Image (cartoon, rainbow, N blue to C red; front, side, top):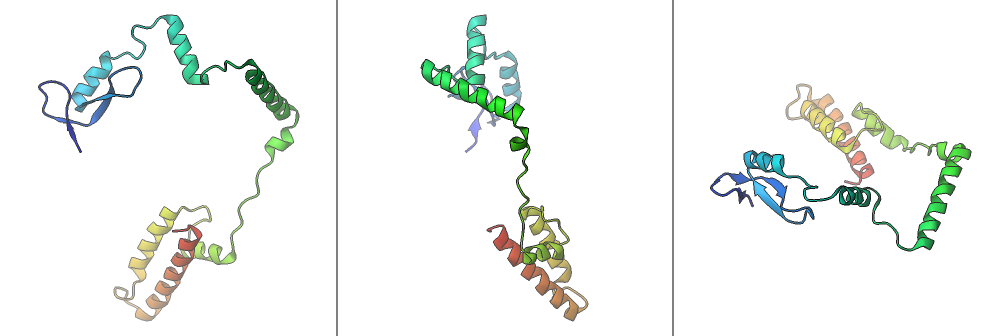
Length: 166
């Protein structure tokens, strides 16, 4: 549902969301013109001291500080261990997972569409529609070869449909 702009006297659609307060739980809905005007004058950090701004920034960046010293120390020890392992034992971090292997049936299906194995389902769909339009028996000039080609394309599409779990 489209709302009316919250600026008094404006009858345009309120398509742009603008925060009412710093907690970012409630919003005004303005038309683009009034949203730009509102955002130009709105300051998230208005009425905050430098210390409050710094504390808010720290909280948003790093999360709420741990009050439990034991947990904080354990987390710090885990982090230090991670850094040490990363620096000293690079081979464990540099290990690249083996590439996903696919069956020859799936590989051949990608070849029918002249697409790489890394192609997305969207790319397969686009290519399928283009080839189906070209080789559909009702529209092609050479009906016999078009029927064979269309059957091959449709079969490859069904294989890839299962592969992508669609």
